[in-house]
Length: 338
Image (cartoon, rainbow, N blue to C red; front, side):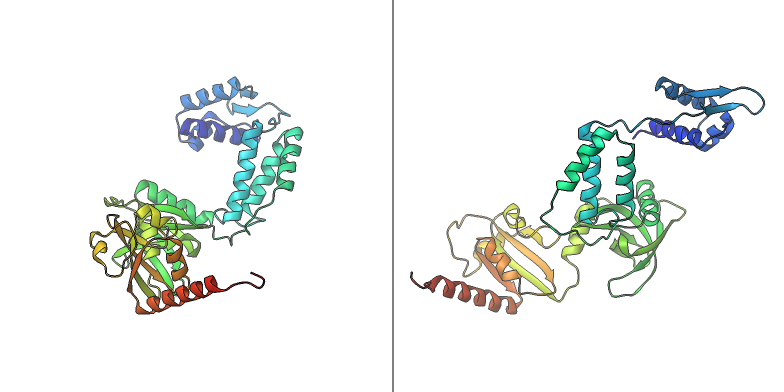
């Protein structure tokens, strides 16, 4: 929404609060000149909003007595998009949990819709079934998200109170580079001045944020999303996995997305012993992961349907061999009556 349109709507909200508002008061609240206030009033009048001019020492503007705003003027497609967006946001954890901001916002939208459209949208929502369970909400508080977003936009340092995954925490001073929503969670990535290094913080673990004086210049290089995905893929879990896979990065990322693994071209992969399989001229990639458990990795590697070589850890080679043995045994099994 452009700034002039936003200010016109703010002017309407101020007038709807009741009473007479002086031009000077409105100019101060909107952060514009008095001539601009009069132009905004003309915009409202052009939209058939009955704004009255009150003359005299305490004159100004007010809405006509008894005036009520008409129902929200949305097309069927627009109203459906708004309500489904709120429902989807709650289920993915991007917005607040059920019963809070997302649900109350949806209720307000429904209240001001024309009755015909409201009943039709209710039919959609009542008959809609999802195949996945709602995600646990990790939506940040508005008191955290809004100042952090403002700091990102204006390149301002921000102080946050952060609690880590293991319970430790404290206040950090951060140069925030960007906000990223990933897999139902919000993250802010930037330089942690307290640690002297780049860090990624989950916003649902931030209990307070305040903008500090000064500015900074974001560094060149990867964007915020790539920084967050790299941080997630290289988090200090129990096992460091390195595998060479024959295939393109795009093929590998269908099973191992950027938030799970770091995939890079590896020209030396073709010389790996035991690679086997056809297509000797195909590229190889190096896949690196940090994982807490290894038991799921062999199945994912097998699902790639590409030749691969395990570099580390040795334990993973044993798990791959165990999976291969179980699959071979299952293939040899003949069902009764076969």
